[in-house]
Amino acid sequence: MNSASPASRSSGVPVIGSFAALGDSFTEGMSDRLPDGTYRGWADLLAARLGARTDGFRYANLAVRGKLIGQIAEEQVDVAAAMGADLVTLVGGLNDIMRPKCDMGRVLGLLEESVGKLAPSCGQLVLMRSPGRRGPGLERCRPRMEQLFAFIDELAGRHGALVVDLYTDEFLADPRLWAEDRLHLTDEGHRRVAEAVWQRLGHPAESDWRAPLPKGVPRSWLARRRADVRFTREHLVPWVGRRLTGRSSGDGRAPKRPDLTSLACEDTP
Image (cartoon, rainbow, N blue to C red; front, side):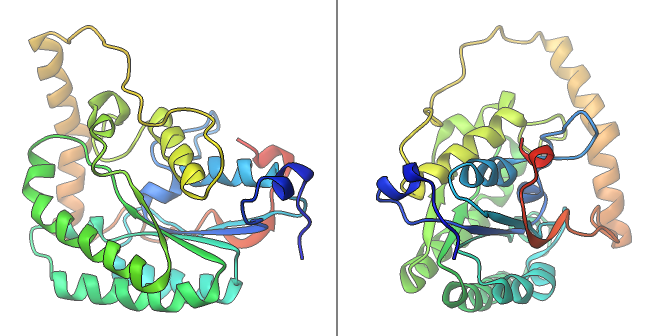
């Protein structure tokens, strides 16, 4: 049994001595890049907060970029269920619904199976309605996204899971919170997600994660076109190439924290 700090014991919030995060690039932390080139992300930020309040805190991050819900179910769910963590987060399915052909019945079925395994094995399961950057890509996928998120709400009700709703808050659609690849959040975006989960767990707010960014100076037409060209060359074309050849950005990549281990000082974001 992990011992809580006095602040944790007096807050009325259940003590979280261990945390396992499952998913894809969103939970791995892209594109919240650290100076050494590795990714941090909202889950690492949340773990650092939890670890600062509980002695002996342990953290695992099984998420790997590019993973589909079938791969998450096969490679991460049973591993996490065996850990018996106090807190488990599961975010997946968006990589599936972004593809031109998507079997929504299979996606929802695998998600249901995964939640059914995780919920009884952990202290608290957290699911998410993920954010989306405004643009043609989101509009094309919106019906599938809304079907996925409605099912997540249903699963949460059945299994006593918490849902963090990042989808309906318009501020997260602000392009300034998204990296150049237009698929992943910036460091500020990840910080806000960590705050959203923190508050959903019952902790007092440390900041307003819904606050709009300060009004900025609109970019010129030429600057926008140059950004579009750079995005197409550096991100869209390689992404399409991987889809056509059946490859993934996560092929051969291991989770960055495959086991529940203590947070060393150098791991604290």
